Amino acid sequence: MLAYKALHRLRANLKAALLLLFLMLGCLAPGAEARSIAKAIRFAPGDRITINVFGHTDLSGDFLVDGAGSISLPLVGAISIGGLTVQESEQEIVRRLSDGYVRQPAVSVRINELTPIYVVGDVKTPGSYPYRYGASVLSAIALAGGVAVTEQMQPDFLLADERLRTLESTRRALIIRRARLEAQRDGAGAFEVPNLLAAQKDDNQIASVVASERELLDVQMQLLNKEVDLLRQQKPRLEGAIEAVQGQIRAESKQLELSQARLREYKTLQGKGLGIISTGIELEREQARNEGNLSRFEAEIRRLELGLGEIDIKVQDAHNLFTRRVMAELQDTRAKLQEIEATLPTARGIRDLKLLVTGGVAGINAERPRLSIAIVRSRGNEATTLNATEATLLEPGDVVEVRKILPGQQIPIARGETGNEPARTTSFGSRTPITEPDIQ
Image 1 (cartoon, helix red, strand yellow):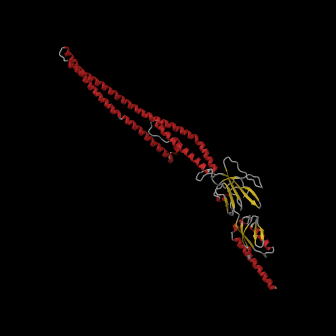
Image 2: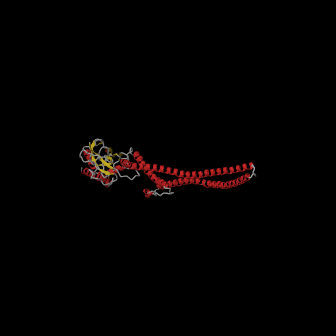
Image 3: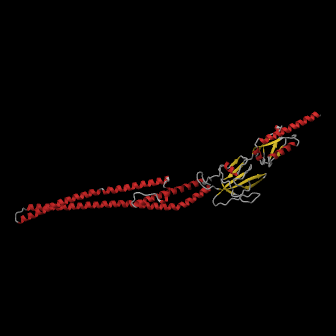
């Protein structure tokens, strides 16, 4: 009898020692910090846990917390652990096993997988994500890919941004063209970058436009000068022809004087009865030929002088035509510039508004959108909507709803079953909340 009692005490002491060792290993396995965090976790439907009943492998294994917050243990049946911590769950299982199933049971509960968190709303990838100890709203948003650009609005923003860029580029080009045309109007052979763009003259686009307009100025002036030179080159030829005709006139005038002198001498002889009628007629014909040649030469000079005048007129017409084209283009350029300058403020406003609506586009330096964050947290069969900031810590099963607040939009109000305070808002990326959160 004494031997039996001693053996019984030895078995009890051995079992107690093994239980202590088992509990120590269970505490050290996940790490002291993780264990301390896990102590605050309360089980909810969807959690997966591992239960070890020392010496009873048939009662050990992985279990899923069902929708009622219970697990189904062999022999024992359903055990409700919903809302309990790890330690409380161990105590509850020990209590149930001790009720006629296992004598002095040693139970260890380990968390395998907690109910995931859910991120919905204005994020890039809404969905469920595994819960991690110490997870916050900001880390949940990061898991969901960050704040989303509104898909429907992104093409509208890109179009508005492209339109604004096109208008600004066209405006700069028109300002430079206006400077070039004004220089051509004034007869200048060059122009400088306008004061409006002086600060940007080193910009590659502006430098390219200036170089293009200067090249155009040079080409147009060269064409005008070439046309004028071709016209003026005809003047020396005409002037030479006039001088040659004048020489012929002088020679013909001298010949006419001789013909007239001979005719007077012949008439004197004829008055004395010494002349021949045919000779007199011939002399008169020669005088008439000389006079006719003089008239023809004088007509040729008038024609050549008229040609000189026409050249001057053509030169002036070339300048006038060039000036008219320049003035017409200058007027058109000024009209387009006024139209663009009147349109630019509206285009900037539309672009900025669409940028705010989309919440900013990657690569564009824009203000970060304001966010309204609410957490839907289940407690048993009840769900409560809580106001939060990005620094708010999450619990397993939390549903995080992220909404962007558009310009001019009123801040959404999140009201829970237990409170009436409005939802808080914060700027994405800021660790400092605008107001103190309802939960931490």
